Length: 132
Image 1 (cartoon, helix red, strand yellow):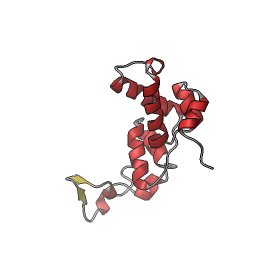
Image 2 (cartoon, rainbow, N blue to C red):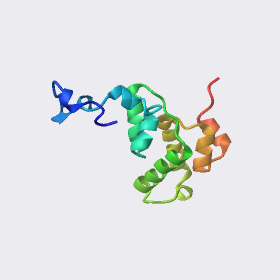
Image 3 (cartoon, one colour):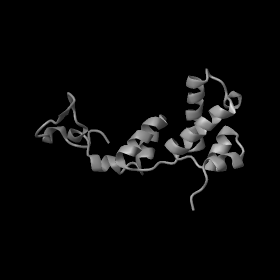
Image 4 (cartoon, rainbow, N blue to C red):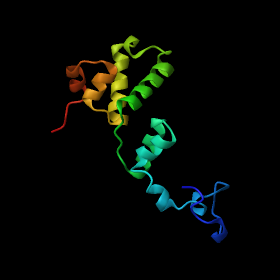
């Protein structure tokens, strides 16, 4: 991906915030062809789902995360907000807040929320009724 543009053919160097732009040394079309979408790219580069969410938002794409991705996010929430407690140890009210975040910010489905937070399906369905 890198060095796909020949340096000796560079006519003008483009600087962005004091750094040479990737457009100068990377064939962007060729680099984009290596990845199916922004999630695939960011999964290859990093496991940080918040960043992949921001990238997808910038390019107008909706992402759907795996259980593993969301479970890692839930563990981070439990670590930061609840002093490292496990998912099973947090209160029902806290689980409801996490469920809302998963649903609205990370496009998690009702069954996925039930699996990850070990909540009853009727509770989650009442919180997020399916639109017909």
